[in-house]
Image (cartoon, rainbow, N blue to C red; front, side, top):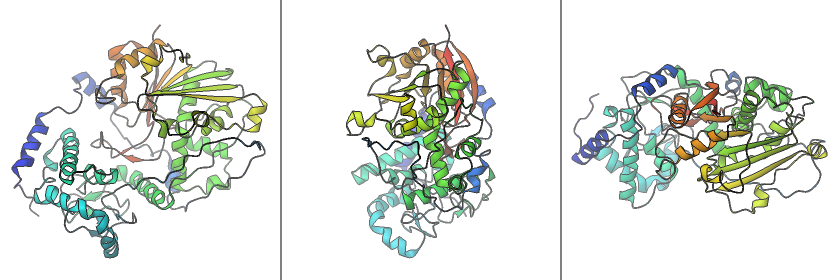
Length: 500
């Protein structure tokens, strides 16, 4: 099948401007060499065999049983329940998220499982379809994609969103933006065609006639992504039952999430029957306390005996770091019997708190056993603040551990397009305490280290490695999709410390 080369002048001009611009940070030859050395298999799930075995299991319902150690006292608590937003995937039905068989005949950008759902989805899609057809099909906006570099491909998609929004005279919803961020093109060459074939196994990746559907490196991971999306769409958010196990002596974490969960659940029926979606969600809400505990055990000599521990979480976002504070008790306090007081301090310019009384947001339910031993979790939020300003405020308390979860320190366009990390990096290194830094992908972590070392001299406590307690709940990768189609929270980990 021939590929059309006749393109509109407007898009040619846009492409020329994009290709002439430098859209990402310039890495010098040393940085590129460092990244090349660390390139390899990005698949986070290669060792987590357990999640693959759960792919076909139906949704497991939490027993929600009350442990004898749970408190019978009534306490005020906040439950922030919300239905997850719709996530667009080009090869899944716009109505029910099943594998698609029918593609929109006008824009060729969205698909449906049946003719019935195509008709049903027309009202949802009609307004946008007209503009997508004009921009992407008639004006051949997607015909440029195979010729763009990876960086320019990312900018071009963002530019397409701007053009579509301008013509619609309204901002696109997130799922509508995803139509252009993750368009219906061949995953190998980005060729836009009506006759793309899908991988029959993961049902996500698409291929043109010039490429086969063999993509073993990511197919299993994409199967997990597909299953998670489907079960999330059908069931909303799940609330995994957190293991409620008390340790008589400090528990040294095994170097594997599966092993830890099997041990803490004691291979209960609930654990053995846990489906893929619930298991991924369990890892997602556990990754923050477990990554902090793992870092503590590596970098703090007195972790077994310390009775008070202060953690600073820099660049916190409420929906990730702050939404499941109750997990800290069961996966931190319960595993360290000598720890009496855990203090969590969340700081960040993008930290936005919901309209709920602050005393309810900071309240962490403590079980009867922990209460009887005088254990407590104290939480404080410092929204809208940079860490380098917080360090000079009256609220500052010196930490034992500083955590930066997926911060993107290397990006020069951080908060509101400004580079605000330089002063923060200086401040957290001045504390002379261990600093845990994580990243979404393997190739990001060397860039984080390069950025830190370009500002201040540090010692490395833990060389970059895959985090055994990363989230295994996948999400699509836009920032570096040429290297890995999926990303995971806290995927890679390093621990550094400012030199004395």
